[in-house]
Length: 543
Image 1 (cartoon, helix red, strand yellow):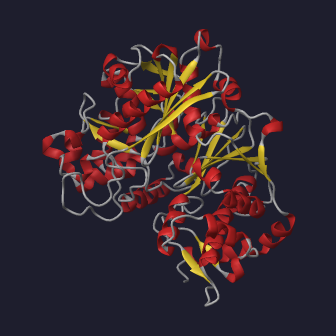
Image 2: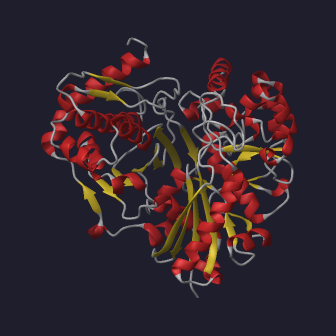
Image 3: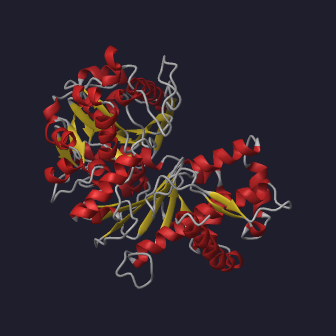
């Protein structure tokens, strides 16, 4: 009997359906772009300009694109739908939405179609800045224990700030909401078709984006009420469901969605996982000390460790958040591919091919140009969506290649800063016990499309970087979780680590390693300090 799993990987602009067998053969991979993409300027069918920092999506797009991509993948693979034994889902996070008790998104109701707060808020929605700041300040004043797991700061992209934004700016939408939940959980809910009380909430999504832990649950009602009484009421009464870990079975594919996807009814469906975190099983990284860098529009870096360390600036530490039995650390950078796309548009160029060649002919440091790539704020270590980037040292002798090299270096310097925080347990070498970072794996589309970028990373970090051969690490990870959800009696896999090794790990002899160049590594030691001085000046509003 064939053992094939379907992974559905929901990104910012599209969904990918991938079919992977138990031996790690990628049988087919198909993408379908969301009809409405990112809703940034005005609502579908509307003309009124959305407020600044708004980023929304359309839930109907998720269903339609998943159907198209899945059917195309099955046809391309040349398999029968009955050969699919499990379905896994990864999703951008925190992308969240309000629904009615039957799962209908509020934005699909006539009375709320023109209300922005009724639509799903995409992960990059930054409208909840003031709410996140107020929640953080109050948590610090009260000495809330959950705050230490998130580096001392509640992110503006997270679940409760976005929820609070709706409560404060459109109370009618908030009052009409029966269920608040992450988009990944909503999609799994649609797949399995259960009552709201039985829907599955992902411990990964809740742990990293909603301050949930197995020991304490969500933040206390006392804290939430101090933030806003209606926030406390909503958490108590409008967040039904059961907490489950990625890889655990959330239910079985219901008849309606089976018909839509072209698959048999009853296939086991895994609990959702955050897209970037799915990249860890997706590259076969089942051991501690491996930093998996999912490099795309933004970047997330995931690391598993045996010890729990409170590190200021780290976006989250969750027990079992990525793999069972280990502490999963998450850090990230708010703009990576986004920054490069911005630069390409600014320079009025079609591609980076020639620009990359020219940039790598320059010496480290781009002839005195330094970049701070905080174009969309700083995720780690500042957790500040309000800071902005900079270029300094520009002169009449500088051109596009200097800007490009400086931007690549800035991204790499940011990762070096993050690795130092993890290893040192804080900002300085004497901050305390940290966690090991022994090897680096890069996945996502960016490493394959931009090898020069990875070369700069290796030079700045002074470490080899493995580029995983799959361009779709998160999608493969979702398939791994779908395989695990199918059960050991069907697949033979008893845990995520074993499935990940079989379906995604690369034999050492076949690994694509980008090695640091010694002559450039030494130069970057001093240039990194120049970057840190610029970061300090900008973050402290000195320039």
